[in-house]
Image (cartoon, rainbow, N blue to C red; front, side, top):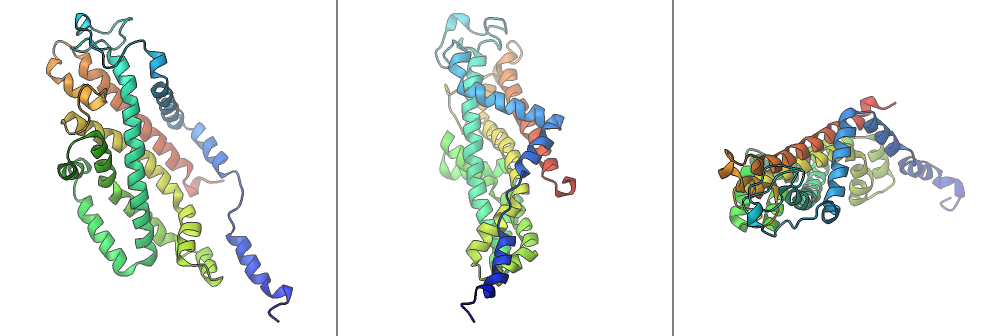
Length: 301
């Protein structure tokens, strides 16, 4: 009979198997990262960077915008650790405040790429057919263009400005997320637990967002970490070309651009913000590589 308590036992067993298990997965990943030199260096540097951005007014007594012509083009010293620019502004202070812009660039642009790219990848990979073909056709066209070139094309349509740069960088990296998420969905949707979800009458929406999405997060997390590095690099490059932040905004790409005409007699103008860009990108890549190794199912014990 339909009302007998034992008749729904098979469905209860299937639901129990589909229910996410509470385990120490994140603790295991964290321990693997802490065993990696790259993870410690990259993660430690980025934590320090976030702290420096938040505590910039406490770490430096100087104003990042206020000019002091009498202190122009001073070489690095104990008073000005990274020297001063042609307007007498402390470069280290400007780098610290510029960290806020670079972090904001990464968060917003990666958020845009992850939201739209992840959603399109989930839909294309799960439903397949003409949706998948159309999505991948457009994705392959966009992937044929270098990221910075695609960002410049988008900026040509949107116009210059820091906010538009974040949008352009985010849109230019959407194809990478579509490709990675779609490939993971194609593999995951053939799994037994997806068949079990269909058997108990789960809707497509529930299967996509409750069963598939949580199980493909490993490669997406790695791609997101590396995406921060790409966002910082492309954002600084676009600002260097004069299409992003504009003076006197303390943005790393702008600072490199301002010092390019003084390299022979004031090398620190471009070198110091350039080193900030380089170390930040390296730190993101080190952390991304460490996360990739930590999330690799072949390394799980």
